[in-house]
Length: 351
Ligand SMILES: [Zn+2]
Ligand SMILES: [Zn+2]
Image (tube, rainbow, N blue to C red):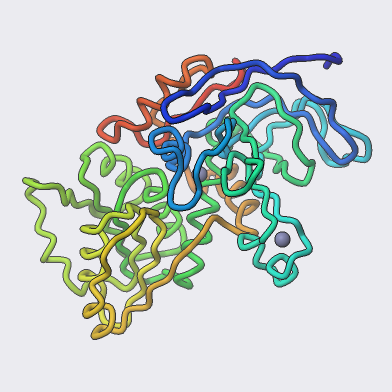
């Protein structure tokens, strides 16, 4: 690493205006690590920024480097860093809570009021993301990935952490019947996490057969295409499930999930969208517990361990990878659910 080194970055200037630009790389300071990035997964939130300029009240108000599902190789360590050395593969935790607000002190770091989450426009100035060749991060944000796990798999630690956090909202699903609506990356990881936790039945739904095929490979015991004109019979599922994870944010999926739960079942809402109508009569008369879930708290390390040990094998969900220079093409592919589950960027040629 020489002074004055430059890195390519993938920066969103405005809606549909994604550019590959160059900027300088800093030296790692005390407690910091320079990472040569390897893989970066394109998340639904990255797609929201790209297509819509944000979601809800979170709007892109200045250019922002996207990306928060990332892995790479330690290239240099700053003073005082222990346990990390050049060459190690790490999954980078994009969450950086302040550590001293009321939420942090209460152990609820995902609700930190001074959160710095990589690639997020939730605050000004925006927190720049990790779709770049090289980046300095805190050593504490680096989780070493042992064994023969690949950078592509390591970059799935973040979305798996989201799903482990969602699963925890429902308590254990061991021995339970689980419904997962929406079989995108989060849906199929919820399937895998529920399978590992001991769910006896896991039904995954979607409107795309390609998505359902991935869900089956990730552990769904059954799949159901709920698209218009599909042969699936949604009414046959009425009242059958103990827990539902709603991962699509769609009105029809929410209604189906509520209808498919048994009385006193639990619905965990993971999918984000602006406004949907909640069928209150179903919620009330069947005493459904409705829970939200947001990002993750301490689940990142466990997610990395499950991936490194392949107790959760994420390889079936990684459907394509593109060089950083082809980021626009990668975003197009990631937006096409008929062919893509998780699309990743090869941030350097070691990706
Ligand atoms: Zn994400
Ligand atoms: Zn905090």
